Length: 313
Figure 1 (tube, rainbow, N blue to C red):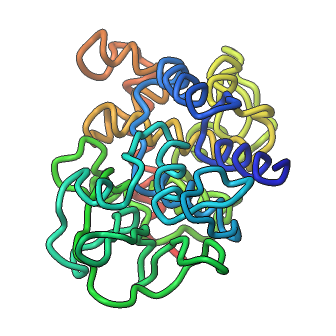
Figure 2 (cartoon, rainbow, N blue to C red):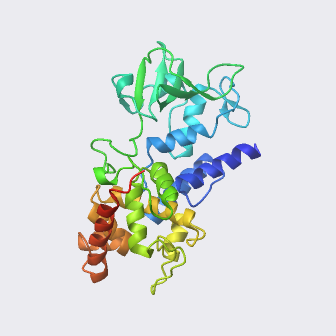
């Protein structure tokens, strides 16, 4: 049980939650609190996949809903979604009716539920590349396996992190994680955080260039700290214990930028203005605030981003 709880705690840290709860109900409350503290945080299918993966190796137990004892297929799905604050029905047949229908495996995306047989008696989660995570059968453990056969239902419960039409978090082309950055300090951190949080590594590098010129020891006159110049209150809300630590700073900045991008419908200028002046100021003025620093900041980051376009890995 201790190992399972440790994995849950680790996952929640990775997903950006700054509070860890002891139960599913408490965790939903903590998620709500985190949303209030950091701005609306829309959980995505990427989060669901990460939640399911924490249970790899848990034994199959028919009717199981407690990972300390074992999980069955629908118990695994219910538990994974509950961990990110999303409630699913208990049995596979009911889970196969939630969300929206996906026409075929050709359109399936990671995080989609894959239901099998008629009536439905088995369910798993698509993780991409023709693979799914599932609790297969008695005597086996939760594992990632090939999608064998054609699902009788494919259901999309949550949007993808990027490229989901109609979802307010869809990113413009220059903000997507495709393509890493090279030839700059901390490139590996920018690339890793970009993949982890679905944001352009080049955008992260551009922000770091303008904020600190890649110096993790900088403290601004206003008290912003480190490579990504994160204010102490913002660091606390993001769960960044030490903004002078480049790895923590880049991860926190990626999550903050992703939140800004979603809040402002993919508008790069507004997302950057919110990073500099706060999302409240952007909302108050209905656009880039009339602060000289912020109005200079946005074009500086965009110019740095353009300069980084050729430095790809």
